[in-house]
Amino acid sequence: MYDVIVIGARCAGSPTALLLARKGYRVLLVDKAVFPSDCLNNYYIHQPGIAQLQRWGLLPQVIASGCPPIAQITFAAGTVTLTGAPPPIGGITAAYAPRRWVLDTLLVEAAIAAGVEMRQRFVVQELLQEAGQVVGIRGRTAAGQVVTERARITVGADGLHSLVARAVQAPAYAATPALSCVYYTHWSGLQVKGLELYLPPRRAVVLLPTNAERALLAISWPAAEFHQVRADLEGQYWHALAAIPDLTDRIRSGQRVERFRGTAALPNFLRRSSGLGWALVGDAGYHKDPGTAQGITDAFRDAEGLATAIDAGLADRCPLIAALEEYEQRRNRAVQAMYAFTCQLAALEPPSPETLQLDAALRGNQAAINDFFGTIAGTVAIEEFFSPEHIQRLFGAANG
Image 1 (tube, rainbow, N blue to C red):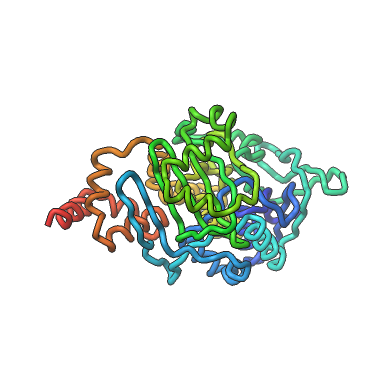
Image 2 (tube, rainbow, N blue to C red; image 1 turned 45 degrees about the vertical axis):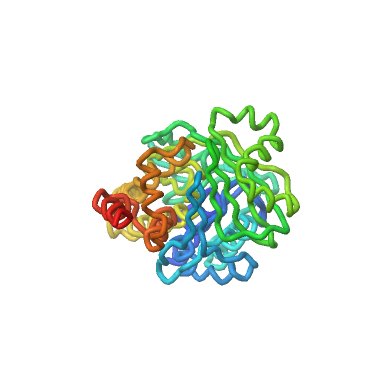
């Protein structure tokens, strides 16, 4: 009998298991994958997520992997180009973008070192439920043996298509239709200036450095164009880059070293994330377009929040179900503004007159540019930066 079973061992599941094991709980962590392994996903970690890695004692491993720090952001839309750096948080000035085979493996290893029992190549077939409560799992081991394991709570950290969410029929809410599709690949031999974001008409292009002296180049298109893009992926890729001549010249000076990877348009939603004997964390409970690269940072924050809630419930400091409900409410308050901001950017619509006016007001005001980048990084509150009073001050300073 375990205290906690966590299904899914990537950037939401392993930290949840790690933190609970450090609190003294008996934790089983299972995943159908073998580590190290890659996955189809973003891997940019904003400063708040890096601060959590530092608190957990894992930042040195990320740095030791050769992943370069990202301290500068360049944002180019139409005739406007802004360059700056988000304000620091907890002394952290840089973001990092480690490959998932680096990040996920070090998270798994840290969980095991904390006392978590890890089973790789374990396929969960169903949840065990008794009297309306989840009490464990049934699954197949790497050796093909079907086993059942019981726990006081089962956590679904199993992604967008969560088996746990389906089994308990967790409803989605605040849903927004899929807005964009994305494809990416990796290049060597490129000079990359931190995180670079370009917004040519109806497109978004992201360039950033990662491990092994490689750079990720991702392009987003409107969801309605997915089939057209997939039918001629390389042609559509270069056609999108043609709108950014300086970047295209740089890309042609490098070498593409990996195949294209990508996905159809991704849904945006929050899910009910707890119930009797179960909880959801990471993309299983909250999913959004990857355009603002919030996924890993959100997963770290929610893993910490969920571990705190489970500890409060299992230690009888409050009813477990109440602690889990508070965890979901805290998550929703934390993501409300960024969720709306992400969906707005993912729509890839032409900039509004108000946006153009803000861009003009930011030019030449480096402190304001840094704060603007801080809203995306999570080191400056979106509500504060875009409050009418603050925007009016920016416009007043620009006019003055």
